[in-house]
Length: 347
Ligand SMILES: C[S@@+](CC[C@H](N)C(=O)[O-])C[C@H]1O[C@@H](n2cnc3c(N)ncnc32)[C@H](O)[C@@H]1O
Image (cartoon, rainbow, N blue to C red):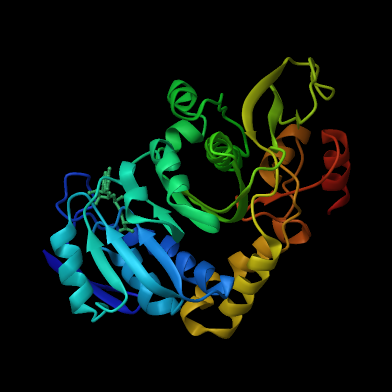
């Protein structure tokens, strides 16, 4: 066991990112935890009751409790590591706010209702969604992590169908569809209990997807399909048999969440905090792109358009509707013909 520091906390963990580690800790997920702290602060709420349901060392729950000042109670739970969590709580003198527990996250609701529930298991969070919904207050926030990106990013289609009930697919915007499939699963599960989700923020990287959403009363679901050309980069949300750009067969993929994937006001506040506070300054540029994102599904990339048109690749800095999903990605409403016209107009 070794002592680590991250943000404003110190904690014992093992320097081992394998499932077999006694106390799992992945230092490369710091970005995710920094953004988690920033997200909670941007909500501007206080006296929250939170649970870090898959605590491991407890680093996430400890940081949320100490750095945000938004929680009056934080339960840090883990089926395996309760003793080390207790030790880490006292190391940080957080005994007044944090307490350790060791229940199986399938039975989270035995701990009462929470304003904030964090689900960060190994692999897919799908099987813990129902328990997280049962233990969240109406209007409360749930954050879920998926690290089974092969399934969600279109590399393991059978696994995606089995775990999420959707046909995933390889595309130039694979990470956005991964997030949308995950959100669809969350919405579908919430619907079973008479609720809906309202996505607030996301953090999508190569090895994980984090989605933050609010639990709200049931609304009309924003779930649908994407029709993707089997040959070129054309895609549409309305049924199409043959691609209207190259004539190849269109593939029906999904179902997936087609509504908003984040809340603009929260993105604005997160950006403002990143401008004001040194501890968040690394995320200024990222959050500036996010808050300006156009809220339409799927993005295009400059390299895929250059190869479609057999032309020079345009510089992404010249596009005014960029996306955080891809450093070469931008959004444009309309058909592929409209996108091609827009792309070609940028010199
Ligand atoms: C990926 S780690 C969590 C990482 C941690 N959130 C962080 O940011 O460092 C997953 C943890 O979940 C715990 N775990 C696995 N299945 C569980 C279950 N059914 N209920 C509660 N904890 C569980 C494991 O012991 C492991 O420590």
